[in-house]
Structure formats: structure tokens, C-alpha cells
Length: 195
Ligand code: PRP
Image (cartoon, rainbow, N blue to C red; front, top):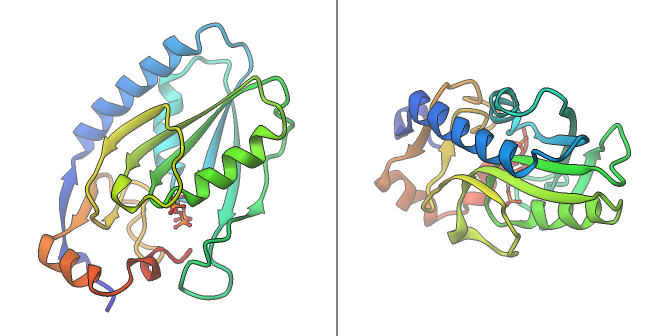
């Protein structure tokens, strides 16, 4: 059964998010200080809130682009197959590309995207994710910047959804331990269906 909002408890406050994102932004700015063609790629929809805050800490000459992936084709269960719903609007050959994600879970999305974007010959290609949930990993992916590493708990808020809702929460909330245990007895994949 789908959890309700009352089944969640705060995990990272708006202040904690702000502080960590400022640190990430400063680190990325230092690492890419020599770049004059940084493209920040937002993976829709979940990364919109994180990206919009992160780019305000980055150099003023960055450009932004957007793409959307889908790993659910017609049902609620993941097929494990990822494809583009829509793609970038600009070539990235010779550019420094920073992929911005809200969460790396199984790693299937980022594994697909790294392979697809590498083939376009960017000068560099890095992943920045707000959350990393290594317990559910099916594909190892190199992550250059991580906001927080979390346990295997279903999370909502700050871009992350539950059946399309709660992306606009200014903080991140996680399922309580007992509700998570109940969910683990079922399939968590069903809750990741796009909406
Ligand atoms: C979520 C999340 C990541 C992806 C991570 O997207 O935003 O993009 O899943 O999962 P993975 O590591 O198991 O591949 P989702 O498909 O739910 O779409 P959304 O961003 O629009 O919510």
C-alpha cells in the first residue's frame, strides 16, 4: 500500500540542505575554476530544486540544460531499461559537463546517462547527486559530488516525489522505520514510477 504523508519524518532540514549545497557549490567552483564552458545538466524532474539552488553557487558563465530519462515503460515496475524521454538542446563535445541528480539509487539511470553522454565526447563528465543510496545499487557509477549518503529509506521532498507529490517540500523527509520495514516486504520499485 502507498504510504501517506503522515508516515514520513524529517531527515534533512531546509537549513541543513542550504549549508551542504553551499559547500558543494564552492567545491565544484574550485574544481572547475579553469573551465569556460561548464554545462550543468538537470535530470528532470527530481533534480529541479537541487539544481536551481546549486547553480547560484557556481560561476556566472555556466550554461544550463535539461533532459529526462525514463526507466518505466507502461507499468509501475521498473523494467531496468533506461531511455531518453527527451534530450539535451545543445552539443556537449569539448565541454565540461556536470550532471545534477537528486538521488542515485540502483545506479541504472546514471550508468545509462554516463555511457550516452560520454559518446558525445565532452571534455569532462561528472555526476553531482544530492542523495546517494548505495544499499540499492545494481550498477556502480562514479559520483564526484555527494550531498548526503543515506540508508535504504524512501525519501520525499526537495524535488523527490511520492507518486508525483511532495516535490515542493522545502526539506527532505524519510519513511519511518516501521513503515520502511513494511515497504521492504513489498516492492519499493512501484513507488518510483514517474509522475
Ligand atoms: C528517480 C531519481 C533519479 C532516478 C534514480 O527518477 O530522480 O533520476 O530515479 O534511480 P536509479 O538510480 O535507480 O536509476 P524518476 O525516474 O523517479 O523520475 P523523477 O526524477 O521525475 O521523479
